[in-house]
Amino acid sequence: MSLFKVCRAFGLMSVALWFGLTGSSAQAQLNVFATVPEWGALAEELGGEKVKVYVATNALQDPHRV
Image 1 (tube, rainbow, N blue to C red):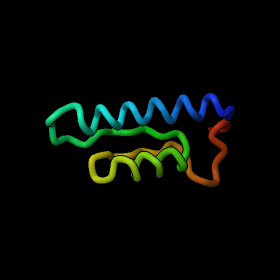
Image 2: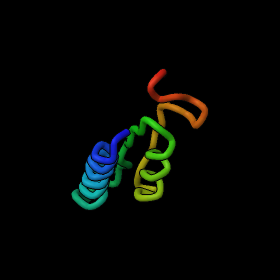
Image 3: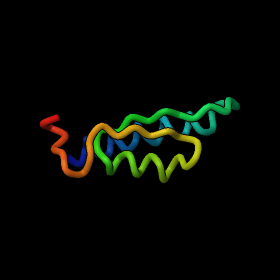
Image 4: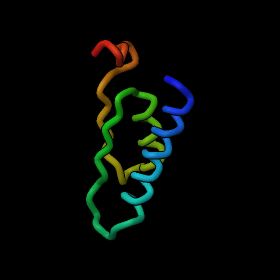
């Protein structure tokens, strides 16, 4: 994955988390779909209890072959 794609994905996830966590007064969790475990772990760290993360692959899978 190129550095540009990583930065773009991180930026989009940050914006989504920012608006999801601060933009409304609703008490529902923000659902996050991560394609690889690394992005899922980052979303959990940033969102804490306010996010529910689903990861599509595990560490032993190649995300390009799933």
